Length: 149
Image (cartoon, rainbow, N blue to C red; front, side):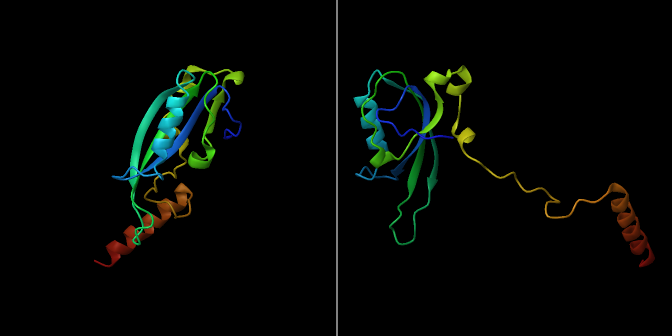
């Protein structure tokens, strides 16, 4: 997916991960910067969804404090204030208005924006076997078990 790089951000639907230090409100709190941008863009930006997803553990040194991940889906409908790319990074473009926004573009969740591996199955890692060969192996094992009784 593309990211928004123009300033101001063009009309469209976007998503953004914002991180907040757990139990703190300091200058490294991205949520403060995003909320300020929303306030400055009043009437031109609408938050469609907000999800607090997880607490990320901090490092043992304390340099990386625990953080809360907040995911926003928002729509720019007018001319917003300049986006603070230096504080928040680049929002991901879900769909630009010029490309025709559909209702489904406004119905995303944070799970739709994360690539996750499929859960491992019981036989993952085993080579796939032809059913006939699998049957013969099972029959041989059963025969060997009966013979050893």
